Image (cartoon, rainbow, N blue to C red; front, side, top):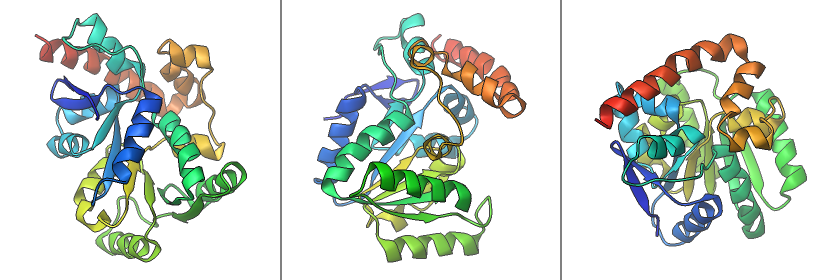
Length: 249
């Protein structure tokens, strides 16, 4: 069972990390269609306020996990009816999922990023999880052209992986999944995990545990990529607070 709570129109899972992974594996064996895992954080919440298709793509997820402390903190500071005291980062879900996938010998496809990043992911997967079979696909165009998209779909049908991990950054990855969901019906699970690709490849580093546990991982990310991220956070954090306050009124 996946208990959820209504976070201003988003059906967010209240399961903790290990519970979420266990639930996912239970569902993989019980469903006759693709199981979809997505994440919700402050950026996604803000973006979805004016992008209905993105909102739909998040609410289509069978498991929408609270990625980042922003969701958890908002449930408490705004005294919402249902409160959570944890987060489930996309990368942590991925790493925990891998442990069980390795025991079961599942097959993966990583879709997105570049050949360089995907080769590093493939090498790291081989070192850490010897029983998981890995294929990768680095699209040649962003956003995907119709021709490129058909190549991706044909590749997935040919490889027929158990699990598809999509790392094209939000909201592109979630919208792509919703647009192509019918084409993914022979895949057991699809997960939108974005930035986890670069971190697992070793190109970026995570914040120390104490920063993650105290909702400060975003400050560490800004320190790593100030040119790209400072504006994103400077805009989205105030907007997140504004929308939470408006929607909670």
